[in-house]
Length: 69
Image 1 (cartoon, one colour):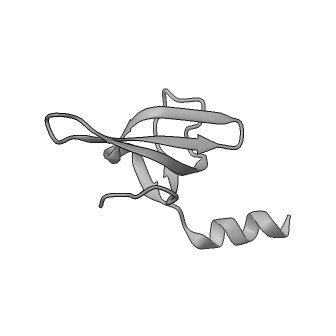
Image 2 (cartoon, helix red, strand yellow):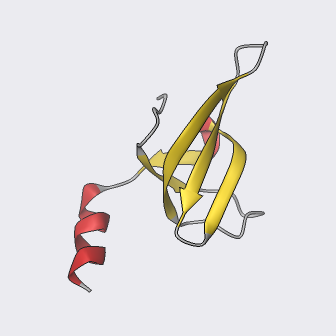
């Protein structure tokens, strides 16, 4: 699954301080080899160069729960 700018995603990277957090894709970059990486903006910062394999589409219910708190 490929992602587009403004998509909400969950980052799965145990080496990142944003592991498990939901963020918004702010930029997509394609290398000359055809690999796509993403820059994701989180509430407390951003993570660049994230491969598609480390991302999962955010569940809309997660956003609704956060709004209710």
